[in-house]
Amino acid sequence: MRGSLGDAPGAAGPALESADAAYREHQEVPVIPTMIVFGLVFGRWWRTCLVVGTAAWPLALLADGVIERQDIVAAAVLALANTALGVALHQAGSALCRAGARWLGLLHQ
Picture 1 (cartoon, rainbow, N blue to C red):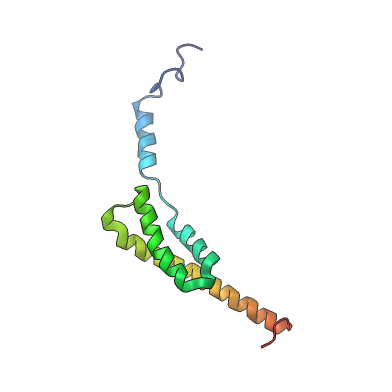
Picture 2: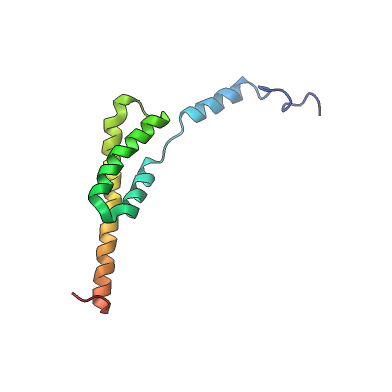
């Protein structure tokens, strides 16, 4: 159909294009769930996990253009806190599983 809105680039209008650009600019990165899952999965090696999570996450955000240089320390602190939560959940779950296995007699001390 000639002359419809979908034919020409920019036919949706400047208001729609600026709204789309604003949405893309303000997209949030799911820091908390990502780092908690990282800590949950790799919590067995908790020291390495905390160091890698604290160093790698801010660098990934910086490389992706999500944060500026001045935000690296804040991103590292948040990454450390969220990774530590995941590690703590992993360690608690492991302890519960070991205690349950001992209670059932599946493990010997």
